[in-house]
Figure 1: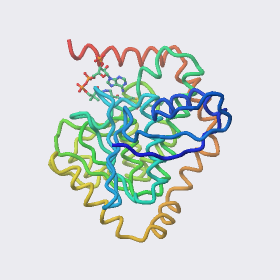
Figure 2 (figure 1 turned 90 degrees about the vertical axis):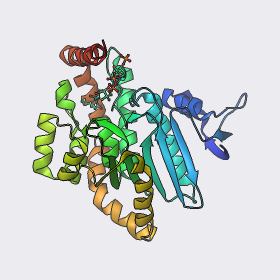
Figure 3 (figure 1 turned 135 degrees about the horizontal axis):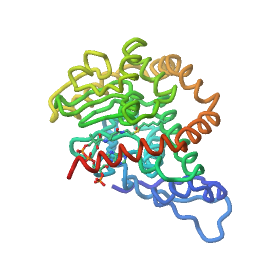
Figure 4 (figure 1 turned 180 degrees about the vertical axis):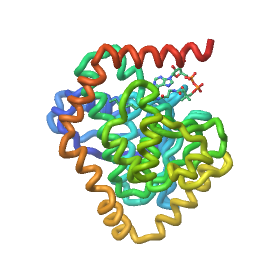
Length: 304
Ligand SMILES: CCCC/C=C/CC(=O)SCCNC(=O)CCNC(=O)[C@H](O)C(C)(C)COP(=O)(O)OP(=O)(O)OC[C@H]1O[C@@H](n2cnc3c(N)ncnc32)[C@H](O)[C@@H]1OP(=O)(O)O
């Protein structure tokens, strides 16, 4: 699918790793010698995030495609944010279904290889991208519905939690939750805030301390998802829900969403740099690096 749009990119932005990655992901080309330049984005289907727009219905389906487990690499996060921004700027789109192109996995969460054995500058860049993804999704003016068609631990669960509604496949093997403590790490306060806003304080306290991963029926009971349906109906149900939410006038729904969510997002916005510093010093500790490496090893050994 080809879509041409002219986007103004300040050339200094092209020097930043984040911007370089974004431009590579979207196939933007800077003309020779360019200062502030106009470039053409000709591919909407990037490598890690597939976007299927349906302008007649005013919706799009966004599919994560980072096999084998849709781990949230820096590249995927970057493409996700850019794809969302493009959809938000597209006046024909009012709602988006977020789902996975990888069978049986919605997303395995943050990419452990981005948080292991790298240098502090990399950790800082990665965490900034994680923050950016959460802020953009959580505050999006679009109606977002998660079609959870597979396992959704940690960062995968976080993506689902940013949505306005969650539909999950009824396979008991698929689990969802913020399981950070099982890895010996701690969910940041904004992960926690998002969970508390969704399932309440007491349920969050239990789920977070124990690192609970809920199968679909339990996730429904605790309020982590809103509907459980057979696997082959997840996307169609999500699209029906989207249509219901889109029946509400945008301005009223958007102002209400913002009123409900802005105080939570502001807590992070007020201390983004400090949150990055906290992450970098926490993740750089030898003990945390060891825990993560052991966890990765365990995942690999599971196969053998
Ligand atoms: C202050 C710090 C706060 C930081 C916050 C962190 C939040 C996070 O999101 S941390 C990440 C937490 N994620 C998990 O605990 C999920 C781990 N993965 C799994 O449980 C399983 O992989 C799965 C249930 C998602 C899928 O199981 P399946 O049997 O289908 O596949 P596997 O054989 O386990 O995995 C295939 C392949 O993928 C690698 N991998 C799995 N998860 C991750 C990941 N999150 N990051 C990077 N790589 C991952 C796994 O090691 C396998 O690799 P190999 O093929 O090389 O063996």
